[in-house]
Image (cartoon, rainbow, N blue to C red; front, side, top):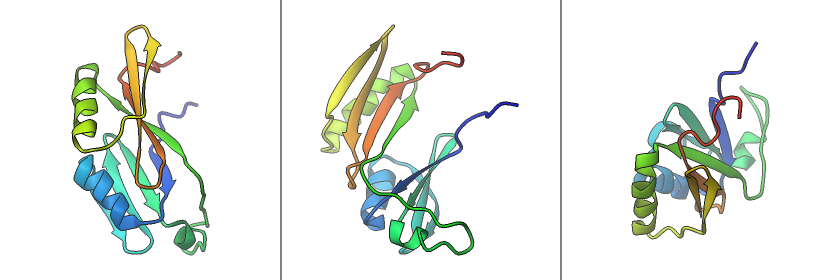
Length: 132
């Protein structure tokens, strides 16, 4: 038995509209689900980014309760040839690139933050190959 991938990643956010403006309007992620005051979901390549209002999601209901606090981290993978255009675009949008890191073997990544101060990273495709 083997897990194929992480299908969904979840962030807990304070302002769903600011989150939507950031991920949809700035980063270009498609909105695939939305319940005002509760959540907004985005398509991120083959994955889904779930953004919940923690006060609404910790009440439970149809699904088990869940919530979190603090500055979380997640990384988005892009083709090597799209890495620099992504970095340039992030900077053109007025988003601060906090750090760029050289992982060796020709792999780079850079870090920036969303409106809730979650630490986001763009990594070059192939950095964490299967078995590595």
